[in-house]
Image (cartoon, rainbow, N blue to C red; front, side, top):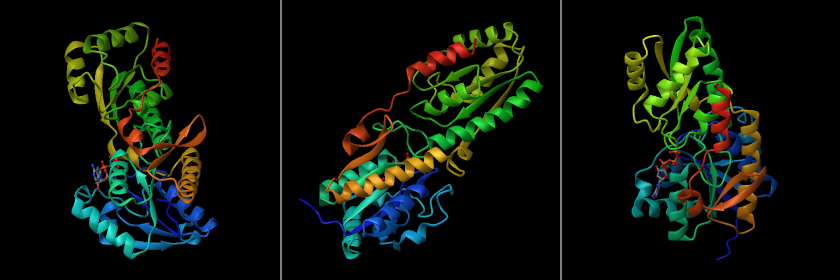
Length: 328
Ligand code: ATP
């Protein structure tokens, strides 16, 4: 059924990421540009169920493009996973006369939107916001570029200590399912080894590689470990293993954790968010629904939600080779 779109809701859902505010701003301003009303939905699906909506106009999003986190707050909603929860959400949207919504979040948020669309034929559009870059249908998710820059800056600082004390540092970065962050920051910060979920390097090869580094005159080493690394040992167990097997190194561990998710978005993420917000609104206006907006070959494109959710985001294998060559 073709829907007339007069009022669009926008929300952030799941884990926050830098660039979410820039995307909210873009959706709000694109609505204003096309003479549509826009409502912010607080706390993701949780706020949708509670009818926690706020009318937003072009001026209400001033001064947020450079802010990390999300002014609309984010949440995970158990209730929205139930039919009853989604029925409540639908009633609230109807009561507020909201005709469509844009959800900025990860694949869980898109799954929720897809189910809601199937049940109520309600127009929905998604913008990928997560630092892990683990979503199919876009080369970049919002916040990923910022996270890379944040992490590289921190590794540079750790390198100062590593080289001053001839130490080996294991640095754990985010990336449970895909190693985008680990691989890119590893190359960008000149790591000796990068352990990612896509490749099982194995403990022996890790030791060989570290021994080789030592032989070639390196006095300190940085090993980047993605959370989901396939060796199957956490970063502290890796330290213990190297401690036992390579007494020549003094080993330290640094787990970067949530600091990777925060901070002011990079210029790249701000521009990407602005482009994605406009595309999401204009796609809804032209009757499209159930898609995720993504970046492909520098073009903003749409991917059906079911593909975005089911597909696997793949690392660039060329980067693995480059990393091997660089760490000679
Ligand atoms: P992140 O990448 O940070 O994990 P995400 O969007 O994948 O972000 P989730 O917690 O998986 O985060 O999903 C966000 C919300 O989407 C959930 O709290 C829930 O309300 C809704 N959701 C997820 N999966 C479903 C589902 N199968 N049915 C209905 N709603 C869902």
